[in-house]
Structures are given as C-alpha cells and as structure tokens.
Length: 431
Length: 165
Image (tube, rainbow over all chains, first blue to last red; front, side, top):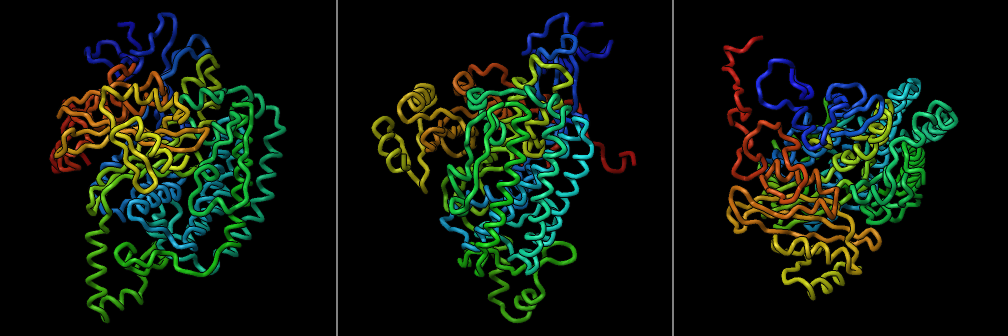
C-alpha cells in the first residue's frame, strides 16, 4: 500500500484528486488527510475541504470548489442581453435580486439609461428584503450546524414569510428575473405594500427573539467566540468583503461608499464589530437585518406612482406582463393587442424578443453590496445583441479563499463554525 | 478623487488611458504590469485593494487576450481598471500578482482554467472550476457552447438506446 493519501490499494498510478490537492501543502508524514465534503451536511452545498490534521488540530487546509459549476458566464454570451437577467439570478441563489441588480446596472451603464424612480425604489425594497431572507438562512443553517436546532426552525419560518412576498411580487420564490434592464419587469401588486408593512412589524420583534436565544447562550458563545479570526489587514489582503470585513472593524459598505438606486437618500447605519471572529459576524448580520428593515420601511414611504420601466422602445421589454397561476406571463390584454389590433406592435414585439437589444460597445464594472460582500459585474459589449463577456465577481468565491486562514491552528470541530461564519453560497462560488 | 481628476493624473504616467461612462481604464503591456501596479498602490492614489481579476478573449484582435484588473482605493473610494493585452494564441503569459495581492490566487486560477492564461509566478496554478482531466479552456471564443463530445479523458456518453434506465 502506498503512503499517498486517499488512494485505494492497487489503483493505477494516475494521481487521485486528494493527491493533486495536497501536492502544494507539503504534507508531513505524521499527519492525517481528511476529506470533508463535497457531500457533507454542513458545507453549504458542495464545498470540499481537504484537511491535514495532527490529532484534533488542523495544520493545513485546501478548499476545493467547482462541483456546482454550471457555465453561467459562457451561457450568457449566447443569449440576448435581456435574457442575462434570468441567468445571473441563478448564480448566488440566496441573493437572486442582488445578482439581477448588479447585472442590470452594468448593462444600463453601457446603454446609458437609468431606471425610473419608482423602479429604483422597488429595487431597493426587494433587495433589502432579500438581504434579510439571506441572513435568516445563514442564521438558520449556522444554528443547525452548531446544535441550535430551534434557531433553524425559526429562521426558515421567517424566511418563508419573505419568500411569500417575493412570490406575490414576481410569481416565484427564487430565481425571479424580476429586475430587468431599464427597470423592473412589472409593478408591485396593489396589496404588497400593506403585506410588507405587516411583515416588518413581526420581523422586528422576531429578530429580538433570536438574539434572546443566542446572544446570552453560553454554548453559542463557546462555539463562536475566538473562532475563525481574520483581522482587518488580512481581510483586505485576501479581498474579503461584507459582514466578514465589517466584523473586523472596517465600516465598508458599498451602499454607503458607492451608492446605487438612490440608496444614499435612505437613513441606515453600517454595523461593525471588532472581535473579527464568528461571533462578531453573527452580531453584524443580526444588526444588518434591523438596518434592512429600516430601509424597507423607508422605501415603502418613498413609493410614488409612476412607470417602472424606461420609456425608450429600443430598450424596454415590449410586453406587459402579469403574475399568473404559473409565474409571470403576458397579460391577456397585451396578447389581444398584438395578435388582433396592431401589426406594428407585433413586429416590434417579435424583433425585441427574438433579436434582443443592441448595446453600445464598451465595458463596465458595477459593484453592489450583496449579503456576502462586494458583488461586482464586469460586462463587456462588442456592440451586438449578446453580452461579449460577463464576469461575476462573487463575494462567496473570494471570501472562501480565507478558509485556510480561518481554520489552520484550530480544532477540527471548529471548522464547521468557521466555514459557516463565511456564509458561502456555492451557486455563487462556482457559477 | 473624481474619475476626471484620476484620468488627468494617470495621463501624466501612462500613454493609454481611457475615461468612459465614469470609469477609468489603463492599458499596459505585460512587462510593465507589476511596475504599474506598484506605482498605483504606492503613489498617493492608494490602489490597495484588488476587487476583481478576469480575462476576455478577442480572436480577431492582436493581442488576443485581455486580462482586466479592477483596483479600488479603500481610503479614497475610487476605482480603476488596468488591462493587459496578451499575445500568443495558445499559451499567453502574464506575471502573477499573487505576491502583491493574495486575493488574486483563485482569480488567476480561474482565468487559467477558462482562458488558458499562464500566470508566471503563481504558487499553485491549476484548474479550479473545471475537472482536473478536462482538456481545453471553455470560455475561449473558439470553444463551442454545446454539441461537443464529452471532454473527460477516457469517458464517453453511450447512445441513448444503450443507456440503462
């Protein structure tokens, strides 16, 4: 039997995947190599960690990604600009609205258009609700992984109430493709502001309940305090952004530093912690949910009647859509109009829908503050109807690089807590 | 610093600076890249944070591959794109920036994986998203989107009538 890690006896001489991963680690003779994942209940999808252990202590770590690679960036080069929205929403599936927003803002910069005020307010409304939903999933899964199962139940319960609202707005619970180039695809249903209002009132007190459950809980403290420490200067060297960076005391938030959709007019605080550990990240995320509630409340007050899509017929999506029993579809009046009344409307619809919008040549990089950090869209156009290149700077992808720094020197039992505190979403990492 | 100020400032140092839609881009050759990044970080411009690194492929252009570095100054909040054009159809080379920006590690592995750009000096340059046995670099424009035989070495997809249920 060879001494190479992870190779079954008698196998051919091609190196195993574990051997390839550990090549650059300089594995010692007296340590053990453990593969954690990709199929593991606490790896947030399909993350694989190759851990080098000396007893219970982690002395080396290699995160292995790529198990959820779906070729979104390549696919988008073969679709129209408008179709891109439906692709990017599937990248980081816990923050679909942020993906759509970043992509659409980048495309709008190339087109030189700006969404009308009501659409901007709706964008803020849905993205900030999305931030709460995403943080709730983080809280729920992290609670589950650290043994606080009731938090899992509560977190997913509250998230479901937010998803109900998303369903009322977009017809879908996830992967909405609601934010489109030039605005949003359709206006809010009439009853949504009142429903959001009711939701805000319940969430306000519920977030306090989670804090009561966890903030004074000695087990929670022992599992998170001093775990996964990453100081500010290391965060910046590794490109780490979002709650991880803010938990290290750096008050960087793209909503405040490089505002989009008029968010500079809203009142909110950028919470920070100085412990730079998993507990600090928990504190930051809890407070961010409260700040998002504030923003959503203000966005309801700012909703004024008006169009939700730019007027330019060469940019706007031609159809009038409505939520039907199976998601979003063409409204019946619109179908009647193009099929029975106006040949020109039908031709225009056909051209925009099948050929897409022409985007002037150029390139743009637009960052938005996703629940996990800086989500950047680098889009390149050659003047055609398809994006020439779209690159998603996903915060999970970058933040995940810090895992070796978080877990090395700690106990193997704390790896789960440290990885959970990064809040990686593998759909965004692998795209 | 506003993009206009930044543009004016950079024109004193670089020959190819573009200001478009509020974004500033600088193009440099692969040999000047490290010196340029160093200068951008150490001058009072303070570009100390690498946001993003990626590549695009232009088969009709010379040079064909364009690696884009998106820099950010955390203290002053301005952004800059540095672009490097790389000649060579099959194996373009560019110096790695991982020593200055450790965050570039996975970005460079990704650009190598998808475009075949070789980052000289990278500590562990290998595929990151595609399987280790994959041949070719899928985001090159010369690679088709679909309708290809499986690229896994030694693997094949049997005809539909011979697949198990």
